[in-house]
Image 1 (cartoon, one colour):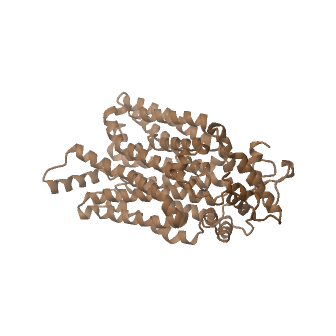
Image 2 (cartoon, helix red, strand yellow):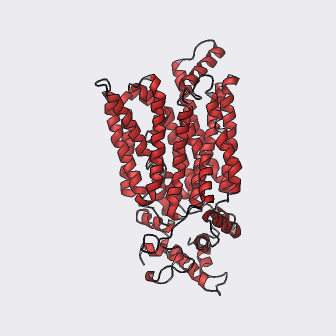
Image 3 (spheres, rainbow, N blue to C red):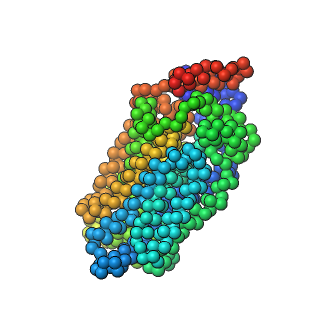
Length: 544
């Protein structure tokens, strides 16, 4: 048997030409073997409502501080002068502003570290619901900061909002990955990235002077956060919990079957349930692994390293620097101050269109070309942007070429690197490893986010127009690593993805695992199989 046949052993019987047995998933990619997966109403609603109250708020909080920057700094200066009797020192103001921007990432790190503990007891859906309490609390703190005359409330509110983002960006991809069929897993996973971009666009749009970007109305920009949180609170309770969570961690087979029926929009879910049951029998009596155990495991060494690299590049590639400081970048590019808010708005539109494009083509092109191509194009346009910013005074058209480069960088990012790292984290690891894997990914994500938000103003002040060469080097290194290491995961099972990494890991418990899977499948055909059957012996001996 070749590697693909071995990976499909739980679901196949006899020679390949006989086709899949009753209760098995038909193999995709073979003539006559592809099964069309419908986007049922509950599946669509779960992705839209979950993303609107989670990843949308993350994107919104990335960009919402950009438009009212001058008003917020003026508020800091007035508060400082009222307390100390003198204007604030420019370096102190820069430090306070950098802290306001970057403390969002510290909160995200705290939220990420809370995920495993909260998710174990509440599950995926209830964790998303409980997370809205952080969003509402943060909105109240930041909205009331101006009226209370305390800029500390704004900083604390950003920290609490970061906790919301840390939990959301870990739990939402897990939830969407566990409720979606593998044929549309990538497209459904890209909903997270699409709503991040929509959130960024919404923050830019509402920050226009004609809307909420004025000196007297900027606190309401943070009050808007309440709306997605309330929508999720009243909508998500009517949707099912993750069937995999119900089966693996709550051992509720009846509830898992009902959840599958709701999400897939059909009564007969035997094929889907048998696939999950086979995995459940393979992992029986296996507890959730800790982060330390995951990092020490030789069987997922390169998977963990690949997740760390992709998440680090996701943040360190320079996109957050552009989102946080687009106004100053466009000002240095020579754009008149009155036109800057509208040019900035175009970046949000480009992000949204590029992320939607990625969601439409990801199941055709795959994860690998979109990731490598995205980082490669970003390297190219960061290099061109450095040249145009250096020579912007030489000709009147050069500043507009700088704007084109910024838009091209954003489009390149959102077409691949903007959402696929979250999908890969869900695809690389089995159920017992997934929470720990998302903690590792989230920790790298938020620490990198914090580093960019805190250090970029100082890097820009020191390197001037050459600061983007740092990001170009990071994008190039990421593309090079992914080209040599990352296998394609499109429409592949966890076993197939693990086999793709097996040679690099030089350690893979494949035969024992497959043996258990094969025996499990045969037992489904043997009514006389008792509780002391071979699969249980394998589990007891620690093979799995």
